[in-house]
Image 1: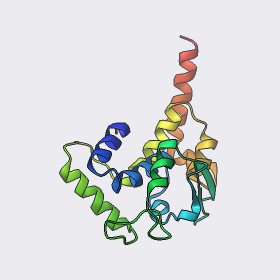
Image 2: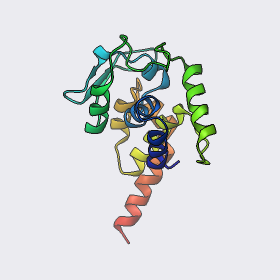
Image 3: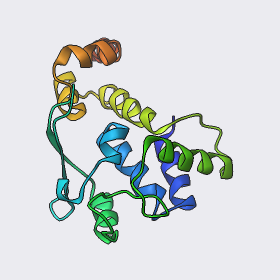
Image 4: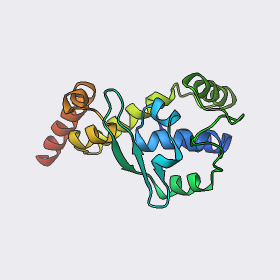
Length: 170
């Protein structure tokens, strides 16, 4: 999936509503449930960080966000304890987020088939393809142990390691 193309299209479609939510998901590799439940007190746009609380099968972690995302979130009005709300200022649910994404897909000519959870997987694969460490990916994703990360993304990691090794000897 071409993330930058997708993000640009979402920005053009809905710069203040859907774009911050999807951009946040794409940048942090957060689970959809973590994004839906994100509270303002978990976010520090001034220092460009977000804290995710421990959940079942997910470790707590602190991650950096881009200056662009921090700026966008700083501009958002705080209408609730939750960061991301629907058009009607209701809390998002997985169903409501899926509905918003589907509305975008219907209005947009992109031929990409995706849902918000795909952004987490895309982040992980791209991280490894760019030479990222599997243990660092474990920390970013919040997996309780590296075996979960290896089970899901180990093939990408080993293929990347093999390609890097081959490239060294060419």
